[in-house]
Length: 501
Image 1 (cartoon, rainbow, N blue to C red):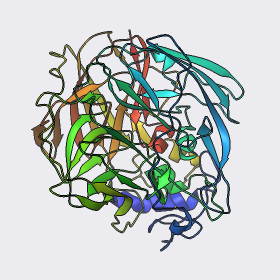
Image 2: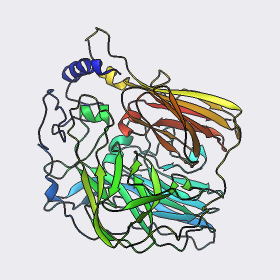
Image 3: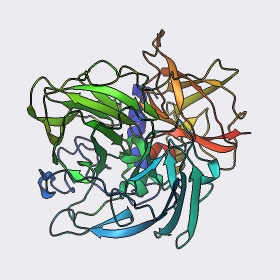
């Protein structure tokens, strides 16, 4: 979509009724977004004030899901999606969607080789699923939109975690058309697969699950606005483990696991006076630690393992710096956010082993795939706008999602080279289900660059008009999804089906 088309989009926003695709659109856009009348709102009118949430409290560890099995190599538990009133800001009780009554949901910790058996109960008023984001689980156990769990029903999710799958993962709903709002209402949880030969097993760990939350003046979660559907929803509160601007202390040599579980917010993370040492990505440890850097960028759905190093003991601040992802119909003032206050001890990274894992490779590809993210061409002169235009705005290979259509096919165990092109003006994070891939090259504005290091990933950002090349192999037959991980775009149809056979 070209910048000159934004005026036509403004006409669309005015022509569309106040009902969004899936819920009544409310006023109160954050920052300097346009409201539904097309005017700029200069404040968070209609939203809960930032000072209303407690802040500065000690960071609480994520609650763990208890293993009910006494058998070695088995993890058995119960997980329930339910509505729950949670006191976030006095005197209000916020009605949220939760896993086991908690938002975020409980942390699941398992080991390579474990068989996982989770009995899931859907106590929500709508259908949902549990998607095990990034895990190599069978397609029929991965919470695809083809496998909804109706209200009041239950199902077992069963899978065995293969060797080599150690990494930092998460779980969230994936019902088509309802994923974005279910996550916005609180449905997301973390999952860690450990290796019994982990070279960093003796390091202390701390877990930062970063999400954001929008609350209205009564501390309730409002539905999406029109601009949320176009750009992805961002809440005024950015939370870590469900807390607003907590404080925490790191022990020496702390291994941080960080999740971006936001629907659409990009996290450009900086800690004043410190540097990051990247140890791992979505699918686990790198071959070796990366050189220190000032920033870490996590796009929606991504995870990292990292160290914070400092030349002295330091009381400092974790910030999310402004990232321009080229939103539609928005005049956005660059703004940074304080996420937490952190005590960092004096430490380097000389204690990290030179080698963290075996060589990351897949071999030579024997097949190729081409995927294009695009947005609807709105440069025509037809101003007879309708709701269907928004529902067909975001596409993959020129089509919006159809649950019954197979868009691409892959052979079981075949190494493929995927070429994914973002033919639009906006950043889009690409996510592929059921496996990890290795980015090899990126191309933008005629410049093609080799990826500086191999890493296992399941989610990768695509800047406007950028092409990403990666190697991938699917090891289990069935239908896999691939889509934009701005959840509103996924719900609007920027998703496709891959049949592996």
